[in-house]
Each structure stands twice: as structure tokens, then as C-alpha cells.
Image (cartoon, rainbow, N blue to C red):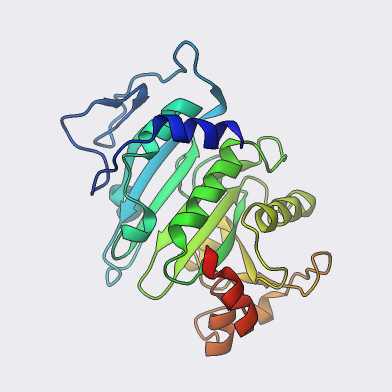
Length: 275
């Protein structure tokens, strides 16, 4: 059991039924809670005896009406910074007050990014980067979100400062997990991130994974359309597909079913019922 799991047991508390940004709480046991998007927030640091994280991390929450066209201005208005943590203990105490992604409704997103990096394509740390995308069947988001968070905070990706943050996106027919990195052109690093994702999430080897640069997202104003899809029956045989075969608006039903965490056979779908 790693330090995250051990301290989770020590710090377990009853969870609130809503995102924990109540106005009557200015902090959660050391971490900070931010109830608006202004720049007034106190510096966060580990308390005496706590286990410091490699980086401070900030939680964000966003929600929008799908029928309204998204643009940079509306996105920035809808995203809300809700808190920053600097230690393992602060993380668990803060995290225990958050609604689980699987309990969110509508077009909602949780983001966990290194402090100082906004979860926006245009941010200085993100503008030359991209993200790996995994589409999930409904009901899997909470478990996968927790696992990818623990992997990131525990520095399991071993790619230096390349990781910017992770996002879980709750949609009506599927949920989407993504991890953002700084340098989309560095294929060695992006491949390492992909392979680590497969390992820490215990994904079947034929899971379909997608990658999209933030520059492409800016061009088509979309996070998840027109992605470049990768998959393989062997861990070492992943192939990047060109744009002509990218997954877009008109992906077939078969493609979409396989993309829901990549289970292209009933056996693989059954294998993940435990998640």
C-alpha cells in the first residue's frame, strides 16, 4: 500500500453531496478552497509533519449548456477554481469533500492541474501540448479518475515536468478521461505517457486511445472531435493513424462502442465489470 492509500484510510471523512465550495468554509484542513475566480488566494504549503507533493495542484470545476457554442471567453467564465493542495494529507482531506465524477450530471468537468497552469488550451504551459483521451462507459468515471489522480500525484509517469494535469469529462452517453502534456511533438514522451496510462489504469491491450494537440483543438474549437486514434492487439504495436482516418463526428457505431474504453469483444467488456 503506497502513502496515498495509507493516508486515505487515516483521513477518511463523510463526503458532501455537492462540490465542496460552500461559502462558509475558507479552507479544508490546510488546503485552500476558492469560491470565485479572483486572484485573492493564500499560499499553500505542507503543514509540519505532512508529506509534501512534488508540485502543488489545483482543482477546477466547469459546467456548460451543451446547446450553447463554446468559445474561449465563455469557457473561461464557466471554469471555477475550487482549491489547491500541497501535501498528501491535504489532498485526501480536500478530495473527500468532492462529489465523485460519477455523481455529476450534465456537461460537467473536473480538472486537477499543477498550480499556476489553467486547464485551457491557450495557457503558456499547454499551448504546444496535447492530451491523451480515453472514452469510458457510464459508471467507470469515478474509479478511473481516482486512479489517474494517484498516478499523477505519485509521479508514476516519470516524464519530468511534461504532465500538466488531468480532466474527467461527464457527458450524456459516455464519460471521458484525459491527461494533458506540454510537448505534443515529443513522441517518445507522449508514448511513455500512453504506456503508463495503460499500466496504472490496468487497461486491456486492445483499448483504443486517442491523442489530440491543443493546436488542433483551437482550430476546430473542440476537445474530443477529430482525434488521432491508436490501438493495438499487442502492447508494443501501437500505430499512429493519420488525419484521414481520425475519429470525427461521423465515427461508426462500431468505432464508438470500441472507444468506450476500447472493449471490442464481449470478453473484454466483461473483464472490466470490476472497475
